[in-house]
Length: 469
View 1 (cartoon, rainbow, N blue to C red):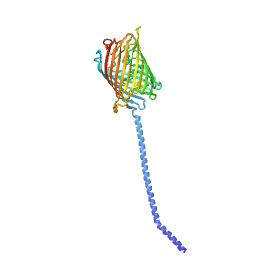
View 2: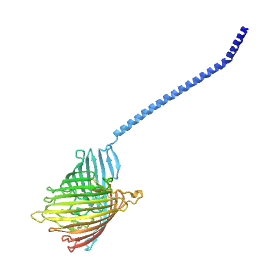
View 3: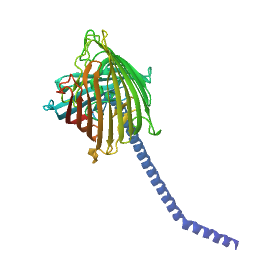
View 4: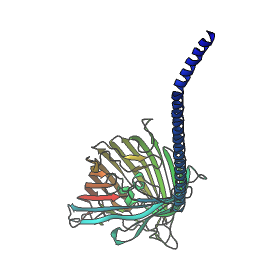
């Protein structure tokens, strides 16, 4: 019985084994196929990864080559940048030097008339200014400027100087060459930025101008002092030329502490200047002369004139300054007195004087920009220029301008001018001006403009178109 049982058991297990054998073999075969497929996939992925790594290496090599090429081009390319602001400015990439090509053009026209018919034919047009020049800096602290004027068919050198204001002298500067003597707010402010077509009578009559000199000064956020020793203008050189000493100082107050510095919309300017000229030389030949036009430059006929004053030894010009900017409104005023010293016991003329008061208002909301370090007025910034669809800037101006050239035997005459002006700025660099003036000349014994030697009323109007860069 036992044998039969075991046999049955053994027989059943064998049948089970025999029955499962083919299935197990099939499963092993399928598993091997799966493994081989995975191996092939892994090998394919490895080849792709190797290919990608090769491409990445090539890309890296190409990028390195491109970077080296760019660096080489930068090293070999000129160290030059060009900007337009307007007018071209050429400069080094590191800022160590620059050259700005600057210029201006002013074209005037107008007409005059008077009670004596002396000015009835003084209707003219002129190129008031046609300047070209360069300015810039080099190395550390060195500056230069050279500008010439081609108006009136002549070549007239204006600024031509070299200046140093580097770390060895900061906050001061030293300047040598031809430039304006530091006198009068009206004079040191560029003609591009004054309110009217011409400067006040105290500037022209007493010959504030460009002269060759050695000078310097120092300035801070709201103050400045300038001074120098000067010879003559570059166009008037002599073997035994005269000399002049000049100096100026200014201080600016800011009503709003948060609106300090250049281009403040609220500022009060106070200042003053002095100049001494020596006439005992070949340039002046111990002679002096003071004279002035009836405001407009397009007439060359003077309305007040001292004529030649002999035995002149020298003169001293003293002038205090004041200006106030309060948003679109501004006031500006100066007074000047010239003391003429004469030789050989002649009477000095100690009271040749004049002054002006002017006001302006921007109808479009702009304000006169004031440079508080240099103590001058600068470029008006138009808020809505014409090219952007705006009206530009519109400014009204009025001035009373007086000068008296009569004192101690000097009979040059007196005159007072009343000037009204309208200025339109389409943008920051273009301006159109319309001025009207009425000038009364009186007590002018040496002036042909007053036929009876007593008085004459002169009236006129003028226009200007100007651009600068």
